[in-house]
Image (cartoon, rainbow, N blue to C red; front, side, top):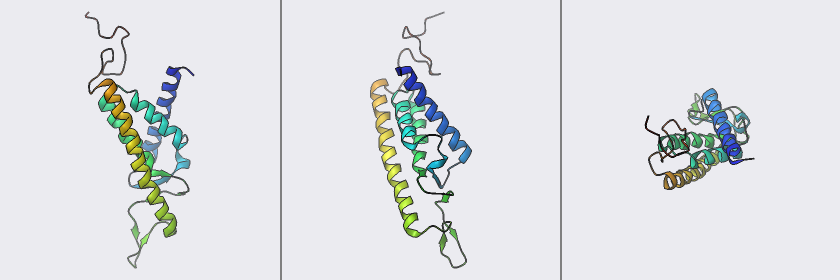
Length: 155
């Protein structure tokens, strides 16, 4: 694959994930990785590549935030699990019949994924900031297009 093909594939992974979170609305839920359009690892790598090659800081920040939502997708969840427990008449929380051990594992995995993804995507953003600075580099326009000669020619 050419570099352009790799970047396009990364963009496709990000777009597919963004469509999924628009459809699934994760909000305060943990969802099963089976709902992801691609493997979690491939999607993470797509975000990392999209972030590190994005010259616009405001777009990178949005990619970082969206990528962190991947932490809410975990293996063996089944139906979505609310992070806010429902309360039964006895005052005990209900999590769809999950064992407390399984629930603790899911919550711990979600927290660790959030920490890991935050570090990974923040690092990618830092690399891009060192590379591009905080403004759009010469040649790139605000809409993401590029002029090969490095700047807009006067008309």
